[in-house]
Image (cartoon, rainbow, N blue to C red; front, side, top):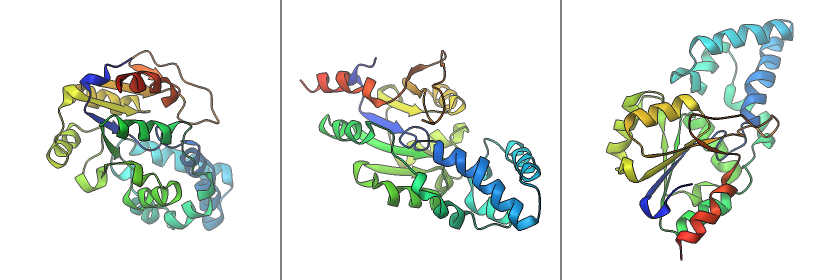
Length: 223
């Protein structure tokens, strides 16, 4: 699928790519509406409809991913609520093996995530993936989400990389399009971000269900 001899840097999304998106889907679509309904004395169906509308209003912006924003807006302790269901945080199959193989192949492994710093800290603590990454870059530290072209320019300043010799993996087609506009030469979509849902059809980019599909080619490049 890719010529690994022509790739030096691998940029990896977190939620839906390295981690099962089921945690986030359950949290925002089930757990938060339930707690919002309890706090504000609403029927759960009304709370869910209200929250879905508010999510959609700012989708794709940095605030959409911001724990502090939603804590203020919803009058809920979002970090505490995440901890209530953090047992649902799961690493996708084959991720640890793939990250280890990248290290053996001499590839730089950089996590690039829109997740808020507090969510990132919780998930790194729960999964212990931090030791398998060379660098972690949070969009909130750069001030713009990955959907924005400014993200890639700021990422380049913080973690210099050759776009032509970089592979970027994400489950968001909007983010992949942004990376494509910036000029990243190798792009890969994840077809099964939430393992409780069916795999998606993706025609716009090369796509895999999980990292097992990449490992034979990467292993062959070591020879």
